[in-house]
Every structure is written in structure tokens, then in C-alpha cells.
Length: 291
Image (cartoon, rainbow, N blue to C red; front, side):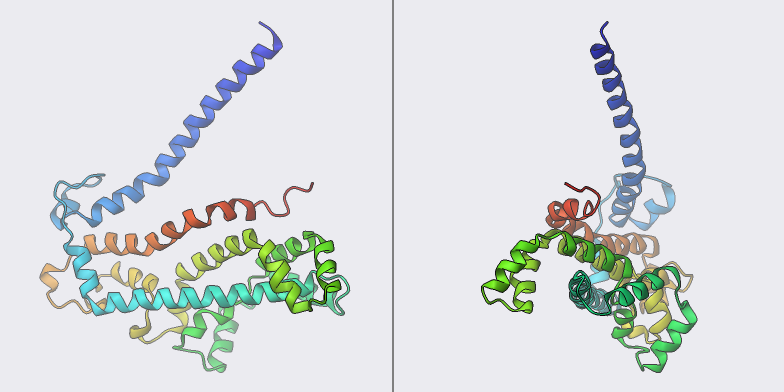
């Protein structure tokens, strides 16, 4: 047997081993999701009687009907959607507009600003100082408290800055020669070339805001302004029925409701990811390979 044949055989064995290991990891990841999805369509009795199942014996939609008929659930969903949409647009806008000038080596004070950004990566104020700042700015019980304290992620900022530095400078210089202003270069040249990075960090920011639990827990005292993640947490407490204003507590679908809310909290991200996947795959590799 030649060395080439041995390498081919070894490569095939390695591929089979990879498929087995990755398939097992995929099952470990996917099975709990299928269980939660199946449990959201199952009856309370079946959830209590069967410790694990992937297909309910009887499909029921009463849990989802209860969710969409309950004002507390709908209000939390709408609040989370609005905060995520506004926060993502604002955070991405601030990140892009700060990263672009920092990518210019001729910018006065650029090194100082970059050092301050890097400093925040190493040292953070912590929960108590951040809470005091939010309180003194009058943002308690305000949706801005869920957006502004984390308006710019310094790690994301540095990656976006590096991406802007790798863009062809000749395109920007040609645009300036044609009379394009600096803002025109940014909007007409830089941003159209930055679709991968925009899609990537739009997803990162949106997921971060959507899944944020600590910020509304710390800054929102009014239960009328709860986000979906706080409501999910409240449903795991012994006083779950009162958490969403359930009246008929004897018929309150505790377990099924938990599963259904988790499904609803997960679906939006799963829905948008396929549309961003092409740009996301490019964006995550930014800076890793130099040609």
C-alpha cells in the first residue's frame, strides 16, 4: 500500500471520526430543544408523567392560546422586540461611527482613545458603580437603561476598526478626488463594503439585548415594563401564576407555559439567523486570514 493510499485511508477514518463526534455533539445540543418544543404542545399531565419525550401523545395549543391572550405576556414580548430593535440600531450606529475615525492613523488623539477603549476591556466599574450612574442619570425604570450602559462593546469596536483599516484606501481616495465628503465616503463607499461586519455585529448586539436578563432585573422595578427574559425567570418561581396575573390558578399550565415561553423567546433569533448566515460566516473570519 502506497503512502498516498495510507494517507487517503487515514483521512477517511479521520472524517468518519469527525462525523461521529460532531453528530453526537449536535444531538446533545438539539435534543433538549426538541424536548422543550414538544413539551410546549403537550398537556400538563403528560409533562408530569413522562420525564423525557420528543413527540407528545396529544397535541394541544392551549398554552400558546393562553400566552397570546394574556396582556402581561404580550406586553413583555412587545417590550423586548422594541428594546432589541432600537438598541441594535443605536449600538451598531455608535460602534460604526466611532470605529471609522479610529481606523484613520492621522486622527489626532487616536492612540489615547484606543488606549482608553482597551482599558475598559481589562477594567470594569462593576454592577454597583454602573447602577449608581444609571440612577443618577435618571434612567431607572426607563428602557434606555437597557440600551445605553452597553451602547458600545469595546471588543466589537476594535474588530470593526480593524476591518475598516483593511478596506482598500484607493477607493476612498478616488471618492475624495471626485469631490465626495468624508461623510459621503463613509455612507457611499465604506458601509456598502461592510455588509459582512454589519450583519455579524447586528446579530451579536441583537442576541445580547434579547437575552439580557441582568439589566432589566437591576434597573426595571415596574413589572409593567418587564422584558421577556425577566418574565421567563418569574415563571420558574413558586409564585409563577401571580407573576403574569393568572386568575384561574388551579388550571394554570405551569410547565407547559415555561416551555412555550422559552420557544417564543428563542424563535426570533433562529428565524433571522438563516438570512444573515452568509454575511455572518464572512464576518466571523474578519482579521483571521491575511491575503
